[in-house]
Length: 365
Ligand SMILES: Cc1ncc(COP(=O)(O)O)c(C=O)c1O
Image 1 (cartoon, protein in one colour):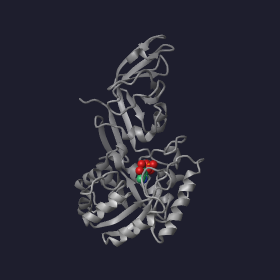
Image 2 (spheres, protein in one colour; image 1 turned 120 degrees about the vertical axis):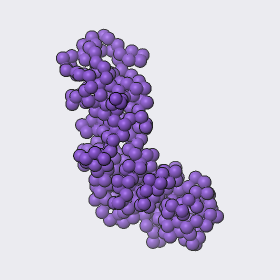
Image 3 (cartoon, rainbow, N blue to C red; image 1 turned 90 degrees about the vertical axis):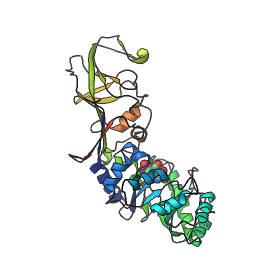
Image 4 (spheres, rainbow, N blue to C red; image 1 turned 30 degrees about the vertical axis):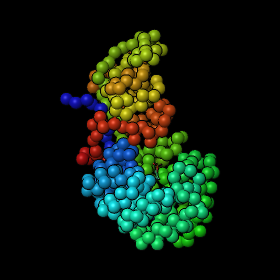
């Protein structure tokens, strides 16, 4: 016997989404961005599955990269934020990691370490003002990296602030700034595009794209689901009905009695809560499927359980009925919208508590 909450991750869907990203930008090589536990999908399982095919992986920090190497992953791995401490450079050399450099301290520490690094991604601050060096400083960083004799190749990289908003011209301005910087430097490979840019913006030919959220079948755009954009959602979060009751018009439900039944209806209690990653801020009305039928959240999300309204009073509701919380016909983007957040956050905040099951398309692993 076990609690019935399961996150089923379709590894083949992730591979197909990776191929789709490359098809959209056929002149580019592509990272598979697997930081933050592959956006909650399981970095080791996802990376092992993709390892034979990807050009490289990208993570946020060296701990994430080492965990992949320890799991047998052999593809190159980029540290998107570079190192946080100078001693990490020696580990980068040992494991063959590539690293971003975005400030003078990282550069100085690299030189002091004498570590040999195959590829360094120099991060340009083209307007987001979060990380990176500016246009004026970039050429001297490239020169210093080349003259160090420690670096095989330097790639110029930047990140977009507003690529998910097609009406915002910031992306065009960032691209123009990037191209101006490239011209100051001369011949240098580029890396600019996240999922939104890969899908909707015109990005430089060649170089490296960095798809993250689209690999998991989730849309980077608020107004449209991943499925509608031709992606294959990779995660299905499902559970079961563990208790049922009829409530009458006026009955109140859950913590704070925050839901009041507007009419008589069936109520299901389902084994999932914020302790699993289901968002506590999800509002009454958040959609799901119970036994394949539309149903919705009714009452505050508890740590381990939610209460769910069936559409009509006569709906047959059995103990053990399957509940799809997101995935398949319940877009995670829509659930996120009801919780005042984005699909990125819902999947990334999944905890270790659900059972994780990995499939390859129709075949269980
Ligand atoms: C530097 C960098 N590149 C690429 C990505 C992937 O972005 P997305 O998940 O929107 O594709 C991220 C994600 O935050 C990032 O920080």
